[in-house]
Amino acid sequence: MLTFTDSHCHVTMSGGADALARAREGGVRGFVVPATKLDDSPQAVAIAQQHDDVWSAVGFHPHEAKDCDDAAFAEIERLAKSPRVVAIGECGLDYHYMHSPRETQLAVFERHIDLAKRLGLPIIVHNRESTEDMVEILARSGARGILHSYTESLDVARRLVDLGWFISFSGIVTFRSAESLRQVARALPHDRVLIETDTPYLAPVPFRGRDNEPAFVVKIAELLATLWGVPLEEAAARTTANFEEVFSVRLPAK
Image (cartoon, rainbow, N blue to C red):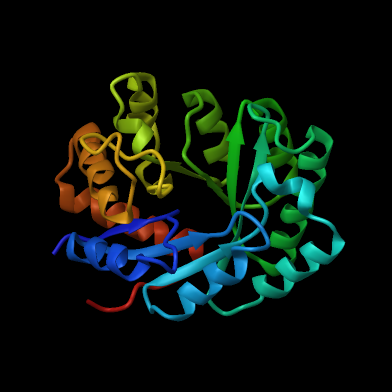
């Protein structure tokens, strides 16, 4: 049986059990469900508590940073101490939509970084059109974690890897227009690469146009195996080991 992991997936209470079952049938053995705001953070923790192969992350997506006041962040910090929480996030910066003011995004992101460092947890980082600020913050932070749904250059990826960060590829890497991103995936050290779904978004080829789900992460593993010139089993084993390392977890026995 092949072993895959999904570094970042959303599994809702409604239909979540079916989505997990389909993924497990396809060989996916580990999941991290990240929150994006205060309202869904308890849900992420609850899902993880119900399954021995699911963990969670809690935090504020940059779109929601405007809602991260002291009381809300205190609750995130309380939830972050739950046994099944293995990361802080999804958090970061997004200068494309600007649903939250830039200065608010920066302040809230720094607050998440401080929490992650105090708790010894990795961070799941969102970055869109904010690379200069993102790299500067991460370079001086002393934090560790994952660049989620990576789309930047090889030079930026190498700098982040040199700082100890992991690079996670979503379905975007399979898109016809993403040849430059495939070059990044081909060139990076294999022990710093993760795969993810970002459910329900970014379904990989051949599922574009459909709601994404964790089972589809297998298609990203297949592409990685091709790019790396290794058997699928080897790509699966490598990304699984990386998953266990970054989140400090061990997958349950088959």
